[in-house]
Image (cartoon, rainbow, N blue to C red; front, side, top):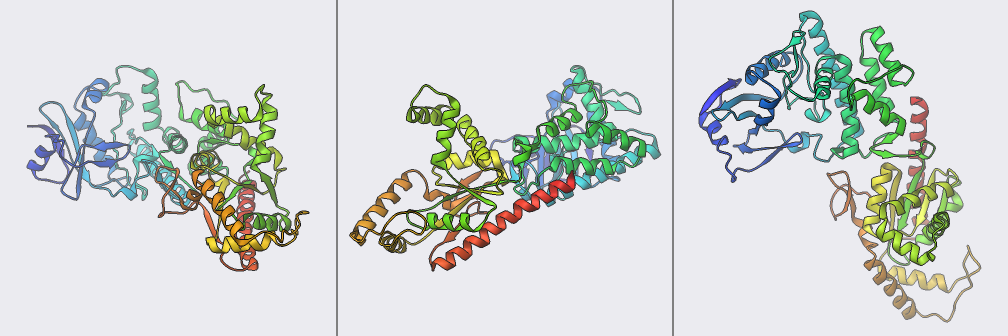
Length: 508
């Protein structure tokens, strides 16, 4: 049954044969951006390679080339434990490796910290330097496919492809048969220092754009930061200067194939892509906070306190922003007709225009507070667009307290407006009014905002457990205690904006 193989560490033959059965009953396990065909016991996983594609792209003994590549690379960079690669009589090729736990992957929409991503990036740059040093001393070409998701987060290469086009500076017997652009990309990525390093950065950009992984604390101008690491890692002074000029857009560069890694990097820098989102450079350091919660929980009083105390904060009402968007649209529809049509039929464009108008009306404030937000779909889209620059403040309070406080508020002159006390109102009337408001808010999914958490696919979802997205403040004490909680939260948000601004200035 086994036609050809390279055994690194012996495993029972019957396990290999069992794997090749491709039984539908075998449990599945994820590896890289693919699905392995099964799992054998607890420490093994295997994946069936795309044998048909291999035969189309290469000629010769694929397993022999894979072996040569592995024998060199295992002494240069950390590899995941690989047991064997085998080919059966039908020409199907299987790779058997040590099982990797799901929290080690940087793909599949996983959430990682900036510190982890940057650390992995620096490790791989160092690995490439080791490979380049090997090339110099041995005078042999060797390389790796440097997609960042081909590595575990602790820095082990586990998706090992052999060099696929050149061998000892000549056409190997693994020559691609078509797609000249793919040929050029393969040479560039697998054999040259600049190719491997720029491809590494390009796949970070692509990974964040496509949602392969998600970095909640992604800093402003992260592309420039990673570009600086790339340039500094180049040991040859002349080559370093040349790459610096190209990546700073001062040097001339014209790619000879489509989707060149440098083109991807330059395009991203031009668009100022932050986690895959195009954002205005001048507005990157702003924080947008939507305040929500149950009726009479203290939201209005809390907002009035914040905007009166902090000059860095601008308060905008959602109901004031949309009329401005409507006027800009010059629509022939009435406002209500326009709002209903646009919010249903052009949802993303509708909220994109809202964001832009909010930025214009904010006068560059560090923190922009907006009230009151409804609907899970809406905040999910705004988070998709703004990422770390948007948040939710959920002010909560027990129903009995909310009714009592509202009763007292209505029977007292307002310190902020010309509203006078209504001494005729009863507690029962306030309770009925509050509960009716809560029922409306429930239909509009307001209460779901309390349970918004980060999901593994880089979105936010409603779930009681997980890493919290919304900041929940319980207004279950005195007014002074509420103000203290709000001060601590707002000062933290202002500090975050100032920190991002300082980092931006340093990176420039």
